[in-house]
Length: 72
Image 1 (tube, helix red, strand yellow):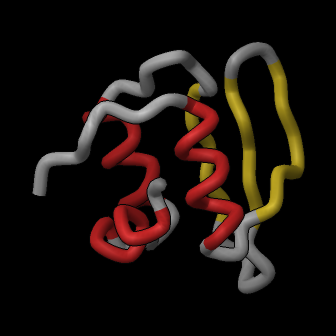
Image 2 (cartoon, one colour; image 1 turned 30 degrees about the horizontal axis):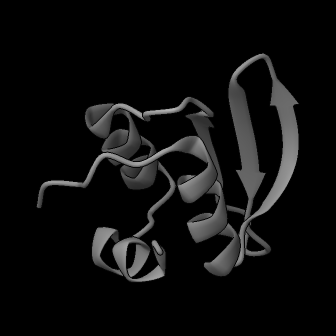
Image 3 (tube, helix red, strand yellow; image 1 turned 90 degrees about the horizontal axis):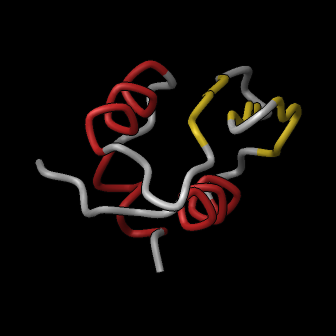
């Protein structure tokens, strides 16, 4: 499934709706943690690269369809 082009702000908001909370930010990278222990790190840019985002979601075991439902 191809992801739409999203901004760092949109990714952050969607992950917060999925239960993730920001735990650390260094430079342009944001680290978010879920209460069940999953961790995701992604670049907070105006346009987040689709390939990078898809890899980050896969590493954190986040279902892409569930993620896309939370994007507004």
